[in-house]
Amino acid sequence: GQQVMQIPQYQHVQEGEDFTTYCNSSTTLSNIQWYKQRPGGHPVFLIQLVKSGEVKKQKRLTFQFGEAKKNSSLHITATQTTDVGTYFCAGLGGGGADGLTFGKGTHLIIQP
Amino acid sequence: DGGITQSPKYLFRKEGQNVTLSCEQNLNHDAMYWYRQDPGQGLRLIYYSQIVNDFQKGDIAEGYSVSREKKESFPLTVTSAQKNPTAFYLCASSIWGGSTGPNTEAFFGQGTRLTVV
Image (cartoon, rainbow over all chains, first blue to last red):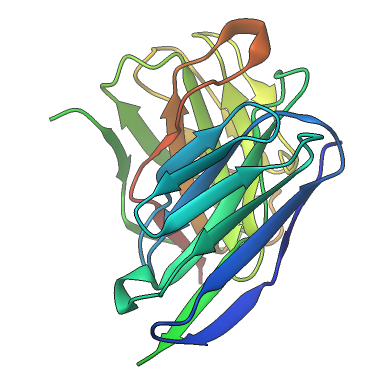
């Protein structure tokens, strides 16, 4: 079945530093979604990427979808304490029939 | 208020008992999902349903059962056959995009934390 790998598992940064998490799929994806889960909370949708090579920005967050639609990244510029949490990518396979497959997530820890 | 509601928030179960976790949504979504979250493991799909009276097994369906008698409701039963049921359970819903699968965001409930005692 489809597998979605996400690295790193944990990332410690100083406040103000940049942060990037990477997502790789074993198969070509129809689309990829990104979610954020605050400690003790539930995942909240951030964005969806559909097109090959697509880049989307939300303030300090930049999302990319690879040309082959098998990888994606989330980059946060100048992290703030409010960015703390776990960031998940979730891929939808080419057939679409199996629902979203989530990566294991990257835990972002920010030191003030 | 539109949204997806899970209950209870915390649940304790004795070994050998079945328990049912509730999930209700008023978003008029066709698709509903159950995920299990363990520390460091991300979200693993247990079951999902695209329409009423139909559901599909996910990656870790063994020891679980579901029903989808109403569009709004997708309860999950954790049976005694599930050997390691202690986990955080998340229910989600989304619009279903037909053969291309869900094409919009998934809305998650607040989760149910199940502990076997």
